[in-house]
Length: 492
Ligand SMILES: [Zn+2]
Ligand SMILES: [Zn+2]
Ligand SMILES: [Zn+2]
Ligand SMILES: [Zn+2]
Ligand SMILES: [Zn+2]
Ligand SMILES: [Zn+2]
Image (cartoon, protein in one colour):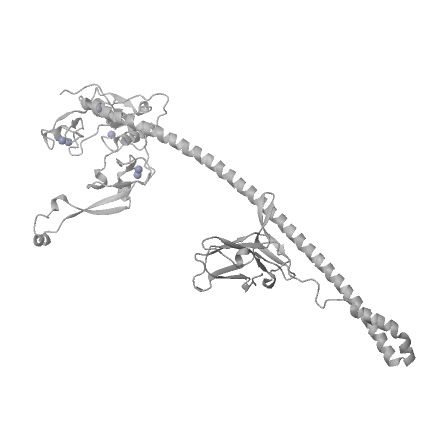
């Protein structure tokens, strides 16, 4: 194995002109809004400062039995002597996307450091004329230059010292201002176990970068290679994975477009249907209002007609009464005050008049009634294409005037449908002319009163009802027909 000298992840790459510096990476913590400090990468690929993560309230705490505390092979008695050690797995919520992150056993500090973000923070600081950056050597004064060889930021004073010392006098020093516009500063990443060593090797067994000391320590005899040698392999596999991930984004973008489009068409559809509903309802309301006005007009006509009729009857009764008054008064006066001769002379006219008046026919009851009712459920035909309901009726069914007719009232054959007709009439004996009355029919065998035959009543909507029944056995049947819960006599 030999270290490939060609830099793969370059030391200082010039940014392409198109992309403005500063947009290339994330530099600010979403929680504290300041430049990242020791940024950690969460599994959802969001980056947060270590201290900010540590301040987060645990979202969930799960007790997990430590692997070394499995005492199931031992007896239950000894378990009491050796209590199981419980480890706590703490879950937090990503402050950016709310995803639940189960922290590794080591806690926040065991999460991967986001070196990319660290680099971006460094660049951001450099671009701001090194504001806030202190010298890597004296950790005191403000940074002026960067030694590309040591990869260290130096203050003016340490810079001069660098130049004077023999060992470092030929190191390449770059003015901080000149570093602006570069995408990488390439600060060395050091081993967490061996802070003096840079991570330049990759342990293939443990699948992570290691340092020279690691290889002779914990990773002894593990297969390893220089990072520069394995980056092609691993970089390519990541690139492949990225390539297979991108189509999902396209598909999702497409789905999003479709969802947005469907949302638009949905709104349009809802509005169209709402307009239909409104148009229908307005039409229906108009139809009902028109029907209402028609009904009220009809009611007014009935009132006028009945009033006229009453007025006429009243006038006739008053006239007859006045005539009778005249006749009675005259006759009484004649009989009490008239002489015999006067009575005999006038008798002819008086008798003629009184007889005529006595012959006049009159009714002591009003010639009309106040029977007007509204049947809200009765179909009233169509109005502007809408079915409307509600009719005004001046007739009331009179069970005493209702009539039953039909051959099968008196005869019915076994297992053959028999039928007869009910004619509903009002008090005046006139046909109701409409349906909807409350009809009940019972057909029972004369000798088996507790087993009635099923009947079918068909409302002909004209005041007649067709009743049919099918007797199961020969015999005599009794037919009961009720209108408004009163029996109707069986006509002959
Ligand atoms: Zn922070
Ligand atoms: Zn997240
Ligand atoms: Zn210094
Ligand atoms: Zn140097
Ligand atoms: Zn190490
Ligand atoms: Zn290893």
